Length: 76
Image (cartoon, rainbow, N blue to C red; front, top):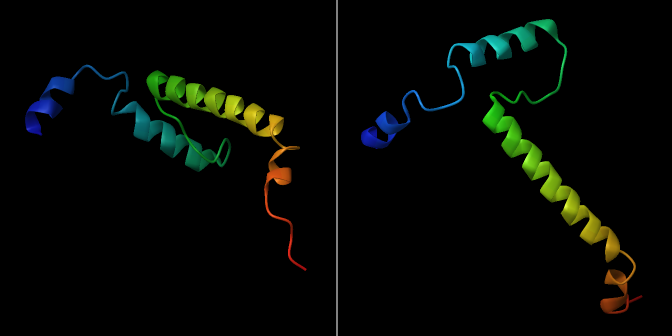
């Protein structure tokens, strides 16, 4: 585990001093989003995830009419 940690030392995009500073500034100002994304690689990952979810939403929307027709009839 220590070896893995040493391999990453200095190779990450984030500056460990700037992250907490950004969080504190956001909290003190009371402005901004509920979630704070730190560093460009995290932002790129989150953006890709949102885009993937939008594709899934389009697939869900496309099946909105047929999905209810494939279940058992309601028992009354």
